[in-house]
Amino acid sequence: MPDYQEIYANHADRYEALVSHEDHEGHLSRALAEVAPGTGLRVVETGAGTGRLTRLFAPRSSRVDAFDGSAAMMAVARATFAAMPHVQCGVALHQALPVPDASADVGVEGWAFGHALSWNAAGWQADVRAWVAELERVVRPGGVLVLIETMGTGVEAPFEGGHSLEPFHAFVLDALGFSHRALRTDYAFASVDEAAQTLGFFFGERLAERVRAHQWRVVPECTGLYWRAR
Ligand SMILES: C[S@@+](CC[C@H](N)C(=O)[O-])C[C@H]1O[C@@H](n2cnc3c(N)ncnc32)[C@H](O)[C@@H]1O
Image 1 (tube, rainbow, N blue to C red):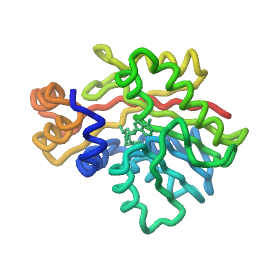
Image 2: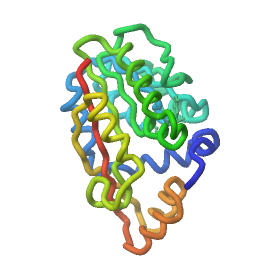
Image 3: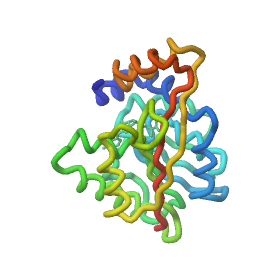
Image 4: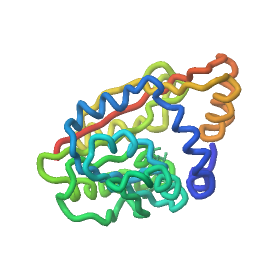
């Protein structure tokens, strides 16, 4: 598998190019509006990367504080939101978000907490528990916590054929008490070759071969949306 730390440190532009192709039908944005409804929201996001989710929340927020541990990822996000002063980007870790207690309506992370399973195989549950507690600290009572994670790339159904993030899914539901729904957030590309190259960069050569074998220009992706009231 690719070295994700290296990608987040050195290839933020390529990462942004990848995620800009996901969810071509806009399912995630509509689902987020159901679990975290309203306008004028104050949003705190951790592991924001280049701002894929930030972009979905910004139009119906009065303020978004987007944080990421990678300065390179935040530099891309900062450039994207330069003309939106209500979106502020900063470098910070999941466990220490520089915002006051109970100051947000929504605390959100996407595709970030799941890295704990490979980066800290022996202690990932404690990490995820601590990161969720930090989101809980910054969200006001009555607000909502939202987590998003993949349930499989290049598959038509959640966890089809098995997936390394199945334990994350079970932990978030059973130990942390989140509600859940599964969505399709398929990637769309101009050509099969672009699909294979762009996805292969992040998910590895096995997926690139699968994309070529299926001649996929639209690549199926299953996504888990998890939410819990504060
Ligand atoms: C797969 S990317 C997801 C980025 C973004 N949420 C998105 O939707 O594209 C994972 C991100 O988590 C960040 N990250 C990983 N561990 C982190 C930590 N402990 N604290 C803050 N950010 C972290 C990485 O730098 C990377 O930008």
